[in-house]
Image (tube, rainbow, N blue to C red; front, side, top):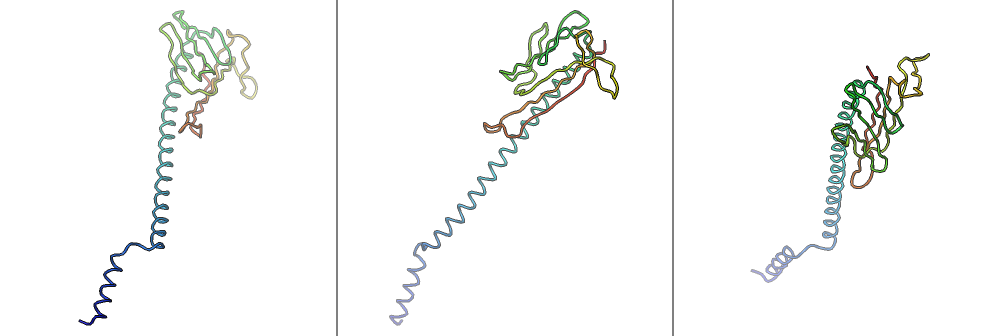
Amino acid sequence: MPKRFQLSRRRQRLQSCSGWTLIEMTVALFAGSMILTAIVTTTVFVSKSFIAIGNYTDLGKASRLTLDTMSRDIRNATALVSYATNAITLSNQDGTQVTYDWYPATSHFVRSDSSGSRIMLAGCDFLNFHVYQRNPTNNFQFAPATTPSQTKLVDVSWRCSRKILGAKINTESVQTAEIVIRN
């Protein structure tokens, strides 16, 4: 075999065994970092979405349970004993009382009766009670009750929220209801 042919073959073998060039390495690093960035961004977005869905579900469940319990208690009450914008106390037929209190400092909405207290809503940012007389005035507007004994309609509204990764982004539940005292 000619010597020239042996040298070119040796050169080809050496070139095929050599490492990447600087340009090839730069392109590979750029492409890899782009793929890694896309994966991390997608993972963070999906994680936040799953947390938000879990928060919405939890808030919705707590709000439904609270509204069901409160509706039962208000409808079965014989009278409203006391009223404030953040608390009401109801009297039952057996003489016991049920109290609903919102504590802004702890963001808890609590139901209390003779058997004890229970936190109905946690993370409650806003809660407000209004009381009205039973009969509507013109244009079907209910007249505000001036004393607890006049009250036949309780209007309640609240807003609860949760944090996603330490920040209140958009996970909140808003509820409002008008409940009539039947007795």
